[in-house]
Image 1 (cartoon, rainbow, N blue to C red):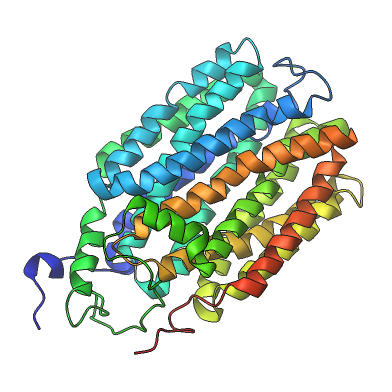
Image 2: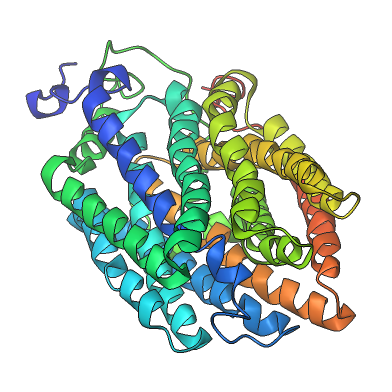
Length: 443
């Protein structure tokens, strides 16, 4: 059976699309820089600079709660919207949403403005990060998904770590508001310009893959037409499902997807804790802004750099083992923060957390991509990311409640560690291996 010419022109794989793949990596680096400017200075100076009362754990967590629920909703919207208007337009809308943020930080009269700024940040992150990941998956082959997401998350969280360190120094040199404003203007402006000039829309690659699947040679990729094992796609969903169909499949109707979604939600408890409680804990123990930037930066650097290996590793050994190991290792790192003192010890605990996140983070997304059909893959990724990033909001609320109930910030650390161990156990008991080479569909 011949392949239609309009389909055959699209080639798949990182090497075949290297230029555009690199453009998307630059984009997600800028996405990481954008969220990273909120990671060190803002929580550490919430009391002295933005008027949050001492011990107001719920107020302190309010901006992460707002961010999480907004970003989760935007992930949901982005997946469906990208299937209608294309990936590039959604990406650019995300950068437009971030444009007011630097000015809101500069002129914020109180903490409410910071909460409002993080609402815009949630819109930005939900639209832009979703599109960088989806676009790369459009371009690559099934056996490169772990590597692809690993590279994507490496670039993003390397950006988060860089921003945390750089804004710490800029805030010391120019003042917290002025340093953040300067950093934000450069990052958002440059990212939006690069989107317009160099990013291509990858929706045609996804549409070509769908057309391939309609042929008898549907399991062959355009680059080389190599036959691959058939994934274990869920059987209880239509070929062209509604948004509700995909949502219910991801949330409870498919045990694999549901266990992946709950793991994604729970792991964001760690990121909410590292975002807010970790800088405050370190500041209370006498570290400078630059010192906090470096300790929290270790978490981001190890997470980002390790994903260069862990994502690709999951392409070889499967998804389930790294997910479970990562959940438990990350929980261990959270507990270690409270079991020692000093910048070196806290950096070690941050590194343990970062490596645990590197094991689980790209692998969860790759697992979703393994068993999501090209017809609704973007929606599946969007809904998984909805649940995952809603974990920021749920985690921030729960951390605030737990810390308030016990009157100590340390209670949030113990709660997060326990949640990670329980969530990892759920994946171990409920989720089967999703990699099509290691657990292919029969027939």
